[in-house]
Image (cartoon, rainbow, N blue to C red):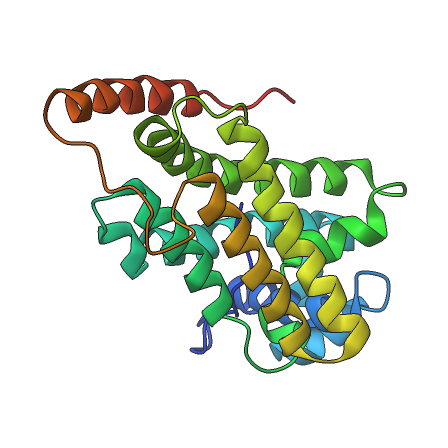
Length: 241
């Protein structure tokens, strides 16, 4: 989860455990895992180290909980996003990418993904964190895959690309966009990458120009709908680990 790539909630959580997790989302994305010391996390959360170790046995344990917290927060935000209300799956996919682009505001730490930030740093040193990040990214990709499968069945049934591979590519492109934004110190660098991603996906789904084909009608629409439902069932199967 995807996901995912949204800021932490603006309101301050009431209990110390939630404050620490919310602080972790901000501090790790801004400083990285190694530089995010327990002291720095406690200062950001407004708690003492006793409170930290009351809730978490170690910094790694806290980071694992932060990943789960990130998945919940971003999952809820994407589930309630306006693009989810669109009926046409191709429009949903493209509006999803537009939604991700709209989040590119402020500094990289404001819009980058906790999972991508973590896994770049800890993939070799902390296997539990690596697997947690991998699972979160793939989980979010599954939500994109379902719409891609339905859109492919309607608009590109003979195309030789796979919805699962394209869904993972969307996440790779987004994570790469965040890296470029950090390297260049500019959200505009990420926005340009997302624009290219949108054009690529639109082309694959036949929505790349004024002459793009409309949704199938009549008998063709019913058969395409059946393919979409079949593809959606396949896409809902969790990816292998």
